[in-house]
Length: 509
Image (tube, rainbow, N blue to C red; front, side, top):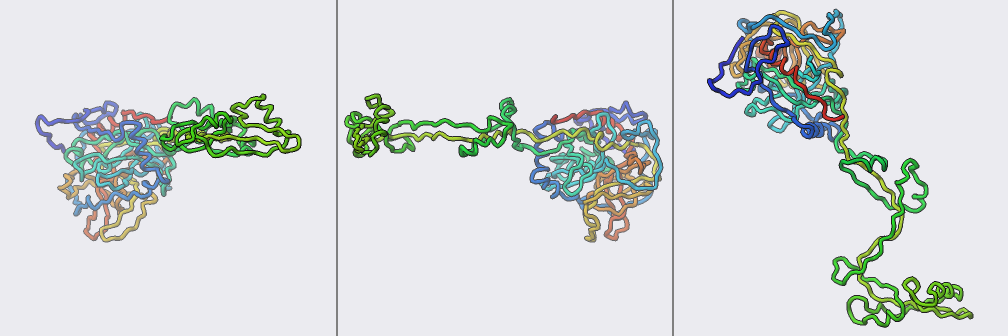
């Protein structure tokens, strides 16, 4: 077990050893680091909106995190790790009291998926990862460099999410926003790749879209206390009478008229119009410029005797505001009504008519899809295991080999199978001294994927005994041919234990 000595008196933001539930783990105080990824619901919703808007455009546009910055010359046999405690395992979800069944088939685990994040360079990347056993069924295992941006002063990446079963923009089991990342102190502070692993707690699955207008009926609209609005659409009386939606009796409303409001000539936007008045008002009105002056000459309307009589009766013998004109009755058919007008400056009102009310409530369209482990299961965890055992590794390779050949698309997960080797990787810039290795000709995007010990193809479950860290061209032929992983020891188990006991919860109902 390699230990990097800490400076005396140095500030350590560790949570201490929280591995009481894992028998045989190392007494490794001050090795656990945790960092917040999305602390609040608002932050998590912004993350989901970022990745899912425009039909998951950001998810589709992300690229595999390239291994170019993690190239190593070669790996050599000898040296390496030393177990710090007895070997130990934690069973996968659903297999706590069962034994693995043997089968010849090779089936991909439901627990694996892509880790998406935004680097400090503003580019969108993915790594691989897996759901892993935890108390609250909310934990993802991946590589440390898929959580911390090693090129940006050890800061955590932005907008971190896990999408199990991701396929061509589809999120079949939902999107899981990272809440907290648990890593080894030596990786976070010293970028020691012998500790290149991370355990990330995630909120419950989120699906749907944000701020999507939802049409509701009046009762729901009236009761809703969030952001909402009403859209009014003018319609004809015929359309209103059809009551297109019989379930919503409030959808069609006869809107009352708003009369013109008399204002002064200096009122902004005022319009000049005319108002009918009695003859006496007309002749009393000012004839000059300004408000209420005479508007043109009196207008004479030729009507029938009966029409004139009805108008006269409406006046009750005297002109009034509703029937202001002067009536002349003539049984021979020469009846007339004389109209008098004055000028008026008005703010225009609205006419009486029908409108249709469309009710919308602006709410979060997000829905909770349940806990990660309940949806896709979770792999077990193993530490202090000897090398020379068979493992299956999984991940989503996409990047090119150093010679430019690009055999993988990153669309579907791939796997490798073989015995782990006890090796030392010649990579002093990454402080690697204790990595284990596996022959596997994959490329970028595979990093963070799980190394599963005792993998049952029938149950699609095993024990995470490593995560892909470095992708190596061991014979210098410009083709990657090996992958390496940090050795999982008692300190790894302590960090896993702390993460596995951390609650995250749900963001929406």
